[in-house]
Image 1: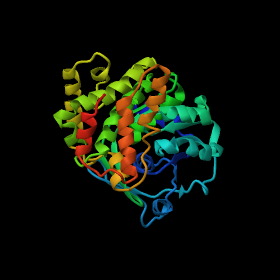
Image 2: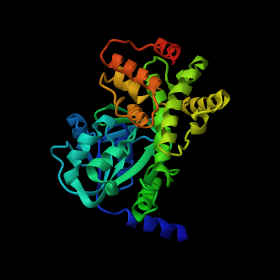
Image 3: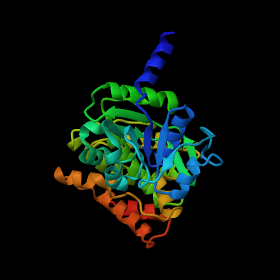
Length: 356
């Protein structure tokens, strides 16, 4: 009975009207569909008109596919220009480099006492806070695997870490309610943290490895399994971890990633163990390649490299820290975007050979 009462209280606490999911792609579509399935009111916004049309069409809807869950929902869906109303909870799920523009578009729809939850990759909370106000910004870190397959279709490939927290680490009623909502509807192992920046910087380092894979033919697990790439992996993650430490952040681990294994002074054996754990986490997943790889070779569009992993570079400069390996990785990604470099596992051999 006590547990039932606790759940009822949690449901009441999060009942602040519809949730606006801004960006209905891999992340937003997956989380939003689970909320709809649990009978929460959700309004989707996306720039792809055919995707919007599918979501709100009772004959089609939004289909979640894959080994984790398979179901379909229908929900109100609009483009940024046609959405109406004011919302207390906005889940922002756009690409990192679209964050500022999306925030300016959604700002008229954000209630004065509402918040924007960043379900993204990178340090987007900084940008959201600048546009919407720090008091209206909520931090989150996600590591589940999902891909947008086409209008109204999303692959939910594997479960992964889901973490939420206030930017200042406070344990507020709104973050407790949000945590309860996500645990009930989407990820039962979701974490409430007082160190969201620790997770975000940890994910930033891991994201550099996903960009690394984006240059290659092999998938994530097979790329991580290449022993000759360990020095490259140590260099990429080490640069991010050094900047995080200079920022006064205590990075946290997840799903096999151990930040301590890539801190200045860490041993090669520690890094090797963490890479093996990351490989083991990724090996069984239906999502075999990174979202960056799909951006480059499936959807043929620009990646958010500068805004995402590149965010560490100017921050590092303020502390007198250079990130030459990150810079070289981003340069190679941009060559791929321009059609000047083909997809090849040899790209990583070249990148590893040219380590400073």
